[in-house]
Amino acid sequence: MMWINQFLKISLFVLVISFAQMKLSFAQTSEWVEDPMKKPEIWKQLVLAPTDSKLWESYLGKGFKSMTPKENEKLNLWKQELMLRKLSNNESVIGIVVDKSVGDGFFIDEKAFDEFEKKIEEIKKTTGGEAVVTMSEFAGIEAIVMAERDDARDLKENIQVNFVILEDVYNEVFEEYGIKYVFYKEKHPKLDYDKNKWIAEHDAQLKKIKTEQINKIKGMFSVVANSDK
Image 1 (cartoon, rainbow, N blue to C red):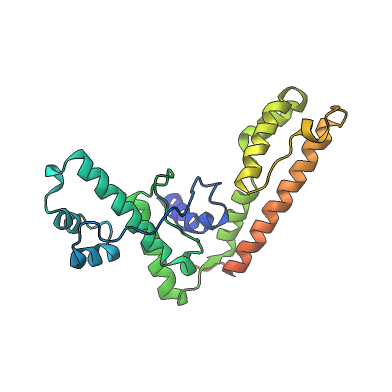
Image 2 (cartoon, rainbow, N blue to C red):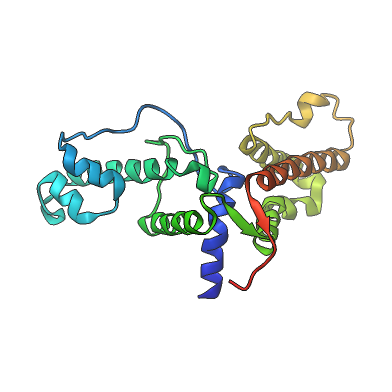
């Protein structure tokens, strides 16, 4: 169980690093949903406690077993929005810039949300709202950021044979960091540039980008010496 608790503790901070790396995509498409069933008193309570099942049953006026698939779909969508909305109200604590994400593949599990809630409260109580991470935790975060994708590492065992596939991998990785990847053929139409050198140069560029990410994280958090906690 210790490794699970450690993972949950670290994962809160890891989310700051790279949304794409963790497959989280926050895309602002419109305003937050606001009391769609016009029951303001219950809605106010749901904004504060979006995972409260009894409140949702009161809001829809029926038990979960009596809800139609369409009603369940609406409820889940509203619940997702309210969970995300609550996280957005704690951006300064958890270090995540959160926008509304609807229909963009985002989903947060209730258990994961509860872990966020616990960690947010813990941070507020112990640091007054400033996110703190120990040196060992930060080392774990740094290792995750700097790690090379397994598929890229395997493909580089034979660069000449796997070069085309490797470029697709680099294209994905660069896109995750918001950088356009220029393909080898576009840069060297005569195909006269050493492909091993090309890969090495792009590895160096990625390392630089990731190092910049690490430095940004260092600026977001108070990194403290390990404690006996």
